[in-house]
Image (cartoon, rainbow, N blue to C red; front, side, top):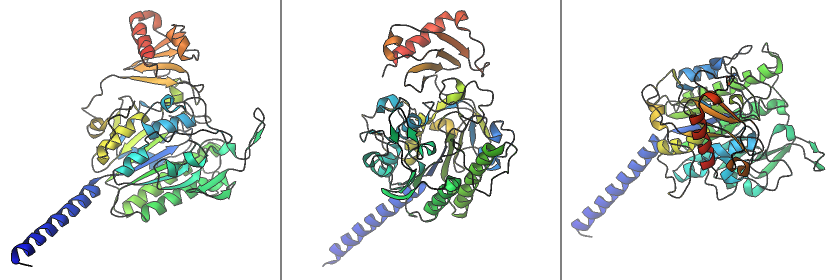
Length: 439
């Protein structure tokens, strides 16, 4: 081998090394992502959102480290459709999961042709973990490992479905199954320890991660969905009884995970998102009207905290309306992930708002409220919300068969004053938005 050939070989080696280093550096700049998703936790169930009777110091401190959103929504009033929305960035109607929830006797689930957030981030080089409640199909083909998650530890549906008899369908559900990936590891686990076990599993994942890859942790706690359960270390600790105890343990879970991130030296470059799948069943919606399974604000406006110490300013409150649908495109931006050109998303990239909440304003856009039966019941546009009092199917809506109420959410957060008669032009405009949205 002559000198020129040796020199060229050395040159190619240097180029390969440079490309490898550049690739590793690019990956190291990708933020880790944690979505801390509670079940039925209301807008008023955190101290920083006005909770009384129990303490949530870790959630409150998290809010002080980033942005606390006060107009943060989920696209459904109950579990299954809300989870489909957060993982796809699309209204649940697009995936056929907009009506009620899935049951232990359901044969369907999140369609495999849906491109999930886990698949998006996995394609961008992420490790992807799902811990906790899935509720997007218990059949193996629909489970997390077939939807982009490398690892799964949790249950396939709600904790109240444990050994439940469905008289209308004459179906006896089995004891609540606990899975590790596709393997059933336990029947009817003691629910007092679910929050603790999910937290420990999440910490184990973080500590044993691949140091050369960023990660997505989708931690979907079962609590505070009924039946309520809490570990002995939190039982009787709040002044609001069992519900307050459960919220305190969830807050403990936040603190344990944050402490782990700091101990591992990765807190600054981790996006931590804290929210709930819908409004409260037993808890508080604060000043909002309504609760779970209702399209009043209390059913779909939920806590929304976003923290990224490396990039997002601290201790900000933001009133701009956004939703969990926006997480898909926004996280894709920060992860450097490619969204397929033919993928129809209902969420928008709100990354500029996250980075500059004081100065950035979102362009007004409609947000649609779907009822538990899958019907469209309301639309918000800017500060205005047009509510259809009676659940309706799409055909009825197109015929204009409305029972209408118009609210100014800027000065009537509790939806008490119907001003439809004062703004006929606005009512007409919002009705047209509903008709145009017939997916």
